[in-house]
Length: 163
Image (tube, rainbow, N blue to C red; front, side):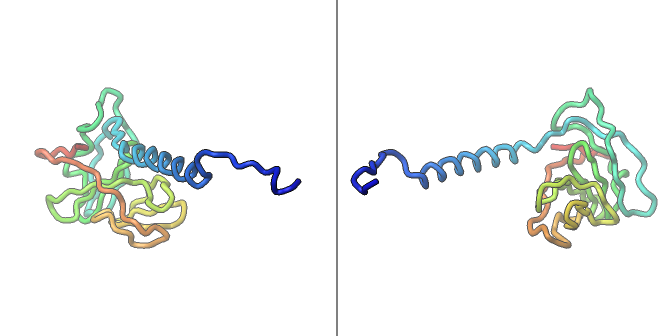
């Protein structure tokens, strides 16, 4: 085969195609991440642990509950200085100081593993060992480098709901 028999094919370069596909994939991934508000129900209420600390709620969604705005818990269910995991909603609600409630995703920012292991104010990932503060979402121990995603909640009276 001589150099004269090689034909040039016109059209987009391989680099252009890869960049276009990569941008489309990124847009799809970001859209999927933005729709993480799947509050498919509300968790059943259980009493708060005595003396603060942490509590894990492992389900109990009611089928009649709607999307956003579903009641998660009563304020008394969230220990001061700790939190409570709502596995079905993929959210942890904490009370850093009396009357101040915060919520964060329970999906690890390292490799998207769901987390339910909450002790005191620390949420741990069983996949790779990352640890996060449920009081502010910050990374306490890697390999994760990004904090937990904040979730919107509202407190009305003694009821905490996903916003």
